Image (cartoon, rainbow, N blue to C red; front, side, top):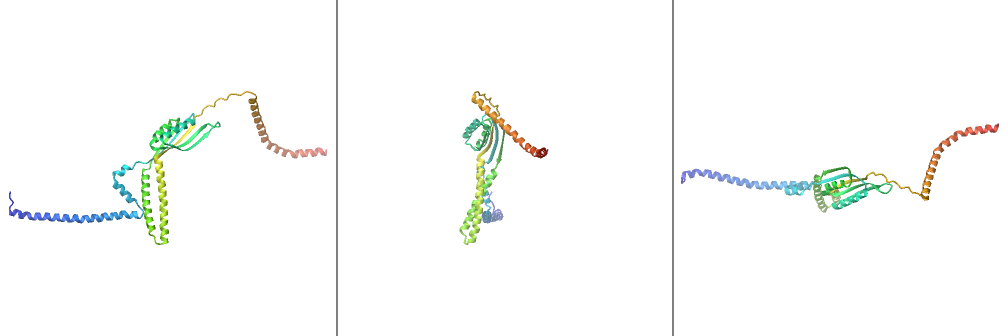
Length: 297
């Protein structure tokens, strides 16, 4: 149906209203854009302020949040694994040799070792501290337990993922802080400024060294597990000693008996000597008095 002039005139106010609203909407959008930009600039400055003061965590947290799932995928659990095994064996040295073969296959090492022997020079006890790559920890605990008679076995695991992340973030922040202090040192114009800035630089460098040592320790402990191993010899009956005959054997036996008898006699004399001395002191006055009476008679 063809619109009439009257209907067209009636629609003009509605069209004008729509155009007016569209113009207002466009204007508010244009105004909002600068406002958003100003807000972003302010937030950026606010984020830089704590870093300038030495906080340094905002940027690291921002980077982690910006990286999203990529950062979460990269970060893996950091676990310190420790174990303890006690074994008994009829041949401690042979068990130690078998252990060396296992360690070579895993790329492990013996960090500390203590041994003791009996009077015949045979090893009867060994205490070892082993370091094994953490990926072989479960295998090592099982295989080492089978080298002898298992007496006791225990294991612990400590998740230090949070400590690893925290230490890394602190190191990054400390390095940034040191760089800022070094820049201030280059702009120092008086001795007092140089002394004050160098004092701050020394303190922050010391803190950085401590953090790096913590990071190295955590890296070592999470890469290599620690296993304490004790091997004790199983008690066995002593082999009978065959009797030897002949003149030399008799002479040796007689000499040993003479030495034992002499030792026994000397021990007895030494034990009685104090009593004899006391008895002599007590009896001396009576003996002296009796001798005088005999002489007077």
